[in-house]
Image 1 (tube, rainbow, N blue to C red):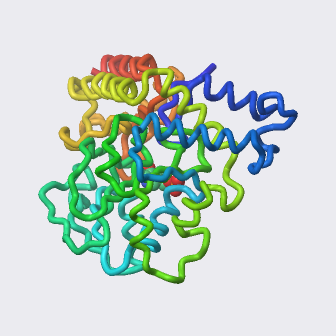
Image 2: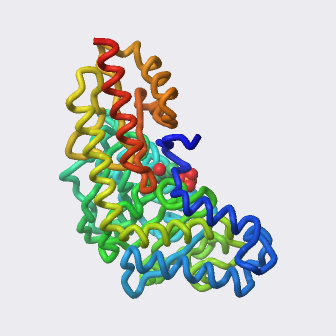
Length: 357
Ligand SMILES: *Cc1c(COP(=O)(O)O)cnc(C)c1O
């Protein structure tokens, strides 16, 4: 039986996405080869790559003057590629969690890093506000959704220096004003596909800002833009699946519908948490993530967390054990998760609450 998949990543994928990928793994169309075997220089794959880029641009309404790349290396490689290419004197970072901290650590290898604000004082349970971004920074880096701590920046910020965003875990969950950003990146496996491919939206003007001379070929954005993500062999199968996800998103009604689904699911679960005698949310209400919903048991019930996990297992719920740095539970409600699965979780919470009070 199919589980209710609340995994934080890799994420749940829609049935049609898995079915079409399964078919292509056996044979891509009628070309007599699997998507895993076909040459990335073939007409068949070039068409898939082009369609993936075009669909992505259409769904996210990417303006003229931006390039979309699909590369390997994960979002973690972007932590290094961004400063390698763009940190000439100093960069500004907002520290909102483990991933942001990782990005900061890598940037420090390349130059001065100004952490303009951090929410580490309260275990990253909120998004800092009223910070000042130095106007001489080469760029300002944010993490729009903090997968581990369950906070999210849902507004597209105004920023006088180039704005760089790690959107790994909330890309495709709402319409975004791309024109406010200069670089957006994300590992596909959170809300956009399987592991193995990373999407990058880069404003072409950014390429003019690169002054460092000794950047290895594969770490240069310009090389990937000029070669349409095909400087070397791309992760063909993962890209195929991303295309299927994009087709699914479009068929569902695009990002307006993804936005509505995300809000409906988050409202259902947060309402259950807020009205519970047993459970309590960990993130500041105004900064709550719609993608990763973190909650724990109140002090009086703490020792019952394992019992609740056992109950959820009997309901086919999977992946809700919280990350060790928060504890408790984390329900990741990515695009393909149906509201029925959230309802099953909410019902389990109510059943458990009844059984212990
Ligand atoms: C998972 C995650 C990453 C790391 O992604 P990889 O593709 O595994 O390198 C980076 N940032 C955020 C916000 C994430 O959730």
